[in-house]
Image 1 (tube, rainbow, N blue to C red):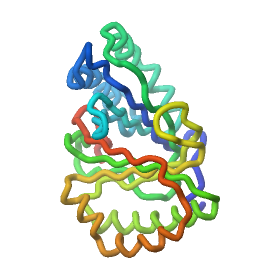
Image 2 (image 1 turned 45 degrees about the vertical axis):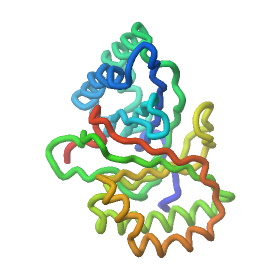
Image 3 (image 1 turned 120 degrees about the horizontal axis):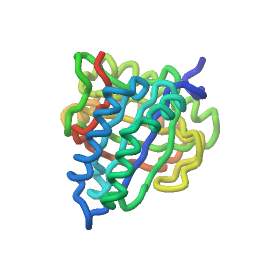
Image 4 (image 1 turned 180 degrees about the vertical axis):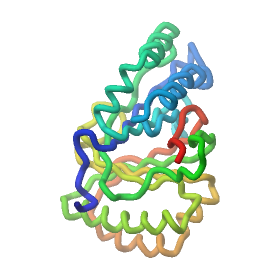
Length: 243
């Protein structure tokens, strides 16, 4: 199956849910402290939730994005939202009026064979703070352009996995639906996710000769960048489980 095909049904997907903290009633740190119990419950009790990390927006200090990964799609989501800890979190945050509103919500199904999500090399989960995550939304003029872009960047992902240990995540998905809030997302748009261990790793990725050589080829592909968002991990939750 080619890289551009979307997984469906119970195949892996990424969910992005971003909240604006009600800063007149709570701080972002307090919000994260309350959320952390839910994150720990997911780690212990939800084998189908492969990532569940709260990250701070670098565009708006009052925003927190909950980055969620589900190994079996909707069935894993159903198991997640029926946990007692999930209801308890919603109740606590509602009673304390901790969240002003949800500013982004969407799901992206994995592009089969494209990139990778984790570097699980230890026995514990990845819960480090200070990892930079970049999300890029891209819309293509036609299917052929999308297919070519995924082919080229997918080949580069294979290279990065071996050559760039500081590039922690290099992954892509396709939007399952139009977004009704937040960034401009239409069904079929591509989401690109990159995570770097530190600034040095991000610069090494940017300045790698093969990355530079790739750019003229990508410039030939007709596409629109619909959003570019950056976040930093908080240490609340986990980006991936142990190996």
